Image (cartoon, rainbow, N blue to C red; front, side, top):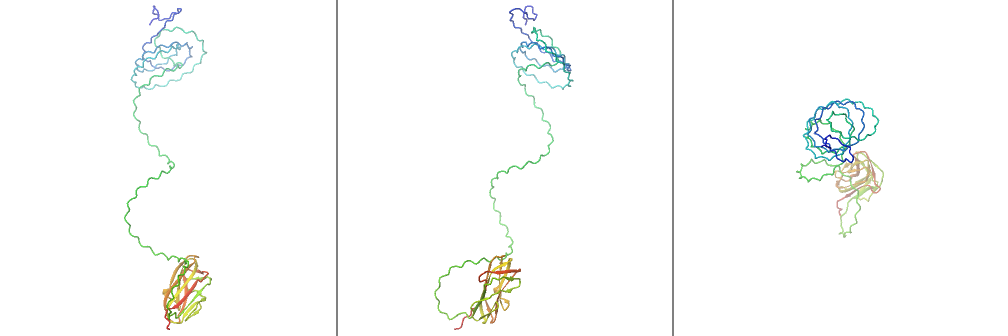
Length: 367
């Protein structure tokens, strides 16, 4: 568009001339080849910023040409006023990426000259032909951000890399909450009866319980003409210890009871009459160490089988062994109370009556 009748594309400096000069931009030509970067020359004087013209319609992108050699940097023109933003053009098809060229040698940094005096803004000349691309000038102000282009097609996934080495085992985590108890399973079939175990040793005799209350006196019976034909007994309160071994020994019985038709010897009773006799006997005390004690009554040095008693004495714990039997004895039979142990041990009597032997004839007395 011309500004005067002469169509000379000029601006007349006439007084009060307020006409607007509009410069039309032509169609962008094809991009030249990028040449090698030359040595940067000294920057030129910066001109005044002029008004920016309106943005033209975006042309069709040309094919990527070879990069030509970088020309010398021309003087920077005045920046025009920012024009109105034109409508967004239709995005063109993305072309194939060309091979990357070799990087040129970095040129030497030129010496920076002294800034010159800013001259008056000259008239805008006509747009000349596009020259060779010069060196990149100073970075201009950041332009408005354009709209985002379409997303490219996703590339094919790469091949899976080799599996890495197994890492070290981490510390043990906190214990989880116990799970809910499952339902009780069905009861299994009864197993076969096991083999009967061997009989264990006889347990220790318990301590003597307290004496029970005296019962009521019974009615007086009719007078009898019968009684014991013979009776008698020995006992001991001596607390002297008695060694026991596997060989039976007579237990000391120094104290006597009333007697009839029986006589006493050293730790023995002799019956004067033949007949059936009730024998009562016992011993109370402890042994050290633990041992199995056997107690019996002998007649003329022979053990009476029905009088045999066996009990385990725990180490240092008092125990009571008692016995009673009925046996037929000849006149003149000598009775003694004997004891032995499975191991060598020491019997310690208690402090009361701790050993005794009593013999009572059961035959009736003829009136």
